[in-house]
Image 1 (cartoon, one colour):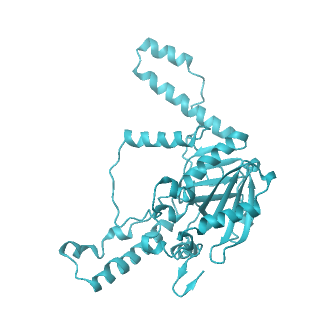
Image 2 (cartoon, rainbow, N blue to C red):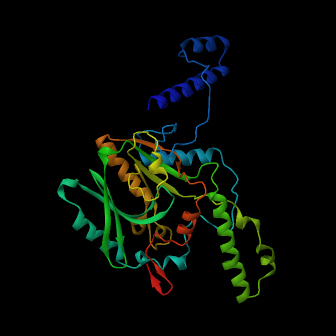
Image 3 (tube, rainbow, N blue to C red):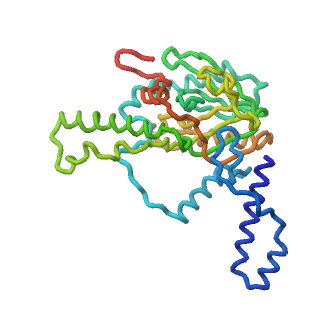
Length: 347
């Protein structure tokens, strides 16, 4: 945190000095006299957002999550960028037909499961109940898993639930007092990661086979569709284009090697959530989709943390340190972390 304050101070001092260039000479000299003495010999360097602490974010604050989102919208409007459309859309998980295979898409399943977990797992000493959600947990190895999340004034409970047998499998409590950092923002990969490129290739192959080859066997394509079969846009690198929230209790320390390279480790000092895929396909308004909305969870989590003053809130990209990601690509493309119908089987 000391490094963050020094970097913020250095950045603001530079801003004040630049603003004096437009003043008259006398005022400019006065302004320089009033400017704090900053060491300008400090080397400047670019630091990517940290997967562990997010301490390099200059946008961190204790302001409300809604204000942060508004500020981001204002900046986009002030400096518009050209919209490079990508065909097909890849920022909505799954399609409307596939989402119906999810057991959680069936009416009443999620509500009954959440009520069962609240009754069986929450006790008065766990604090005031604040809300419940069905979200996607993204593990250290970039695997997506379906999880029920309960929030109280004292803890966050993550529950693995079997939506086929309708029973609890496992749960984990994370106390708000133990959290030191919460990061809310876009899920991104490191610059040297091959995951976006591999994801683009996999998505492109799937799209060509499914949407082009199969459709062409069923009907005669029109003249405008002749050039779309091997469009290069199908194979462009695919970033996640997804927002998330990360809860951390590592106090800025790097992950031990035995934890970072062990896919079965239970000692990872952070947990990451994103919206459940049903959020983009659920019919109805905001109220009907609120159970699957990560943004609402992050908003209530921030209020709970601010009430006890246990952690710093950062609004910055969340780095998923996955560089090759072949296993996670297969895992996520086949939605192995979700309970759904898979042909003649359900798991």
